[in-house]
Amino acid sequence: MVIAPDSFKGSISAADAAASLAQGWASVEHGAEFLLRPMADGGEGTVAAFEAAVDGAQRHSVIVDGPTGEAIESSWLWLPPTPDAPSGTAVVDLASTSGIELLDELRPWDADTTGFGQAIAAALDAGVSRLVLGIGSSASTDGGIGLLTALGARFLDGDGQQVAPGAAGLCDVVSVDRVGLWPASDVRVLTDVTNPLTGPRGAAAVFGPQKGLTDPGDIRTVDAALARLAQLMHLDPEHPGTGAAGGAGAALVAWGAALTPGADAVAELIDLAGAIADADVVITGEGSFDGQSGDGKVPSFVADLAADAGVPALLVAGRITSDADTAAFAASASLTDLAGSGESAQGDAAQWLRAAGAALARAL
Image 1 (cartoon, rainbow, N blue to C red):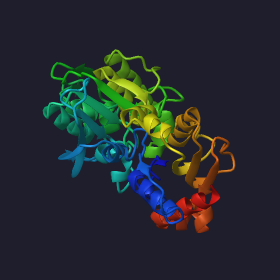
Image 2 (image 1 turned 180 degrees about the vertical axis):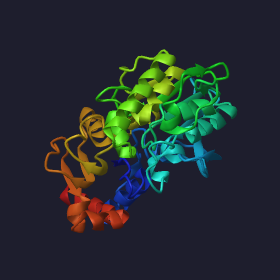
Image 3 (image 1 turned 120 degrees about the horizontal axis):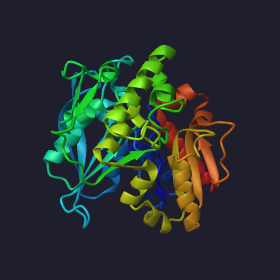
Image 4 (image 1 turned 90 degrees about the horizontal axis):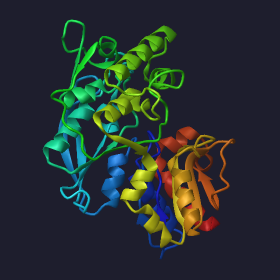
């Protein structure tokens, strides 16, 4: 059996969710064999998913500037060499360096991505051949100027001075000095976001309010600043995915990285399709399975792989909404239904995931 959930955001990591589901199933079917393949789509849990699935993976601790400048301990993950990455691959996620979960309160104007860039620089200093970057769960709308500054670029105001961090500094940028920018080579960026950088579907308009940028006038100001940044970096602001992570997607494309659907890339690198081909059943899941979950999210992606292999797929979610399409799954379980409320389910997600694993084993 393959167990390949995403994280249940804010409740439990993908790796711990997979382990809990296995424990629950084993309580019913004692001889069951499990292959845990925790998944991610570029957001929270990306590093942990690779660490759990790839033999020989090694974490490297690093101290970085968090989203509001305070020093925090984070890490990046080294994956062993492959023919196309002879010095190994580094996996770095924005969530653990510049993520919104690291904030005590929203900081729409000064939160930035410097820490993410510092962690990337640490991996490059170690001499890796390839970078795999997850950019979900951003705390800021800084257009990625923080991360590129950490990699050697300079973003200057009208007086030729380095601008302040965050969206506030972004609004002051009038020129970009890329002379000292570390050259990009084989950089893959994992994201499930296809939004452009600017406009009504752009970073400021769609994701800014989640980060505290709520005033319409402020949103227009930051959107205009992002448009100016795109012009300075010779980047098409309509390029799909450049609006990811408050415009960090745009900065990485301008650096030379390639954006790729997160779930696809994670699945490829952990050979999820190969694992499923040898399985009798697959369990996947996420925190909320709703009407949007078919748009590149982990459960639907895993269900498609299972269908291709002729293997039944089962779904576990913190909640399953009334508009969700569960037709791809042979059975499903909602932690909210099992626990009696969403609050109870979130309060002890591991317990209710074990209950869900047992319930699915009995159902099948």
